[in-house]
Image 1 (cartoon, rainbow, N blue to C red):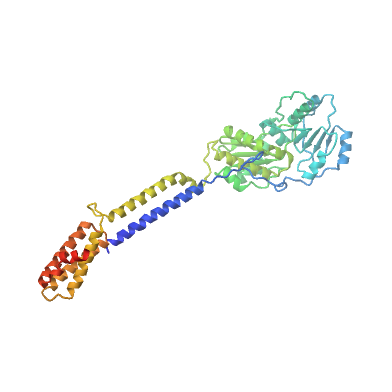
Image 2: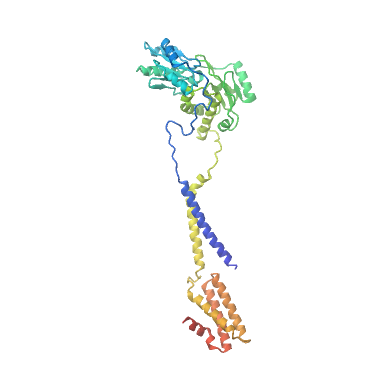
Length: 454
């Protein structure tokens, strides 16, 4: 029995390897399924946000269409209550010239029904919904950082307004100008800001709408947790704007500084030269149109901006440690699966060959029916002789039966054929001596087997 256990283990290992190979093949084939998600006009990195779910709508309403028609007929520029857009009137008058251009300015954050009412007003050349400028078949929007900065930090729509009016008059588009002017904040302005940043890491000025820094997106954008945040309201157009970012970066070196001017966000701090413009252009290039129509709270604007910072960090566009990304075991192991499958197949074939070899004698001769028939014949002879043996012939018969039992065990355990034949030869010699002692010539193995096998 000591030999049968390894043989059983060998068979179990062989079938286990085959089963593992089949499992690996199934996993590999299932992993080859591909899905395609195609979208147009929408970034695949951002999910659609239903209107009104992010606090972007206000309670502001507009007059009826009839009332607005009368207002537009009475004045070239009509500003509805709650409007925030402004522009350089001198530049706009120059591009209008002697044409009759009617401009209707509506507040941001209107729902779809209110916006439709504004669009139904007749004899309007240019409509400004929030900070979105449109007219005729055209819509004008900023496409540079200075343009977005003036638009979202101060509500200045001079550049898109001038471009749209020129396009409607089939005139060349005037070059854009940077309408925002900076100034360095004085010590009195910096003192409360720095005091709040040292105490809580956050400063919210009067008129700003930031209530809390989004903790999860802030942690993914700046894992060190050392970022500082300053929230300011939309600044008056035409007045120099205090630029807190560079001054705070000098006071708090090696710490990220995020400053909000209304819906405009600036970054200063580590790697700001290569990081700030990339992130700003990416963020406002995608969300600028939506930010111009609605009145988002600064919490939501900051949340979306920090999410974009995280995207840029994952892309490795500036030298900060990347956030931890869990490893997908299947994606990592997928290239190895074909090799693992091949190894399982080779293992199965090797174990099968070994199992087959154990059924073959070490001499290379397959055990044929002659060995089995010889064992059966000698066993039958021993049974018949046991009925007639006496005290003199019993020892020889006993030795012969012992050899036959050993031969049967060797045959069952798959031992080499030569070993089995040697045991049978020894058993045959013992039975032959027993037959001669008994004096029965018919019990001699050569005679008995010839008669039985003939």
